[in-house]
Length: 408
Image 1 (cartoon, rainbow, N blue to C red):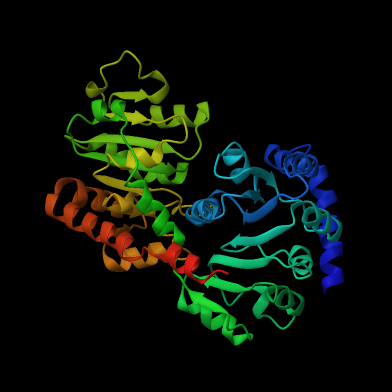
Image 2: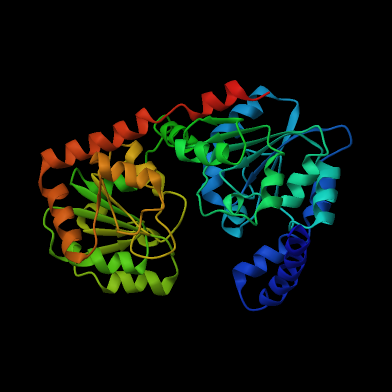
């Protein structure tokens, strides 16, 4: 099976090179890896001490960030090397100051794994949530590096727990310790012979809690809000938008902020044309009396977290499609009541918050209107639901301290 895996990786590498001519995101994936080794050789000198963090994408980076920051403070003489698998992580955070070296992770061939580790020579390695690359793990096993999984999440349908997953189970032996989010993951690992497991919880709760300590002021949002009940639709997709646009068009004494997942001109115009109220775009806000507008469309990226601090109600997108639910913990950290779509079962934090009553899951436009009406026009319901959301985040903090206390 391991031989077959290596053959498939090589085939995938060539296929991706061909597909890159036609798909921009794949082109970033392929071209971004062409300079990885030269970048590593330029930024890591002989004798440098390093610690390596790997994140699949942006979400995993956010999970690992609070640990990365603490580890960096604990090891000021080390260089932090951060790798990403996906362009959606690397392209957004390639200029971040949280690490000394930020690159794509080369494809998991044996040659790449050997070359990468011969340059980086990490003393500690942190994989975030998942991304188990057998060649990298097997080569790490030959070094003195301490290897950890943080915010780990395992499911019984993963290859480790199948009869044919022996080579993957063998690769897991590289890990010195697994820090997992849930009891179910611990049980699964123990079922295949791994007892070096600690239930630490999800580091994202620590991450979003830190947001409360930062300056989240956005003066233009204050001017737009103008002490009016405000609903924020965050990371919305077209399917989400068709569900809530009717409510926006009929609501009274309410302001709306739409921060769509994609900010292309055509998509922004589609949203704007579907609205009957007075609409202003983020890019057009200068020189305008924002208090006069009903809807503000954010056609930029990077400020949604701060915008949530002004929300009275938040709808978090992705739950009506298949791309995946976006981050509900950011608005929850601010004590904002949340509405989501029906496709959220693969997100344990969403399931838990729905069960607790801090989040409302809706299946269609009628349920969306009912949920928005309840939260917008009933102060008691809004305050109680938001209080549950904020408490939910607060009670789940502490994963970072558990991890730091248990690493060598």
